[in-house]
Length: 198
Image (cartoon, rainbow, N blue to C red; front, side, top):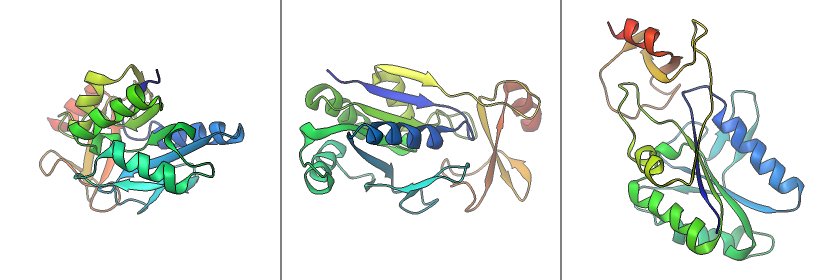
């Protein structure tokens, strides 16, 4: 049986870079992968963008109403060099916090019923420290949880995502605001986050 993985970390912890490295490692060994991300992540449109300057187009975007398992089966039949779900070595999902709870259940089914490892990368909480629905469900279902670490400006481990508007931290607004479109984010430790929040 394959597994569902959730690799999470604060903003700028290298999640997209790690995903692209995993894809490269599989493909270097002649294995086939599919890469997806939720359509709500408009940064890079249908491309995964790493801060290190590496990018790659996704094989498909996932909208909130999509059945992730069915969509993966379709893409495995349409997009792979050797078609079919049994020839898919893994599914990689960036920005997994934007998946719905049902889609995380479907990712679990892909791993358990279809024997396809599903590696999800994302953040746990928003700028107000509230969990995203996809992340909360991944914390409940994933066979493997791995924290990707980054550091705060003070040198401590960053766990939180501070949202900035015009260079100032804000603590009101919608849960989703894509980095660089309306706002920017800074990874903060608990002390610095609480100090900024006041």
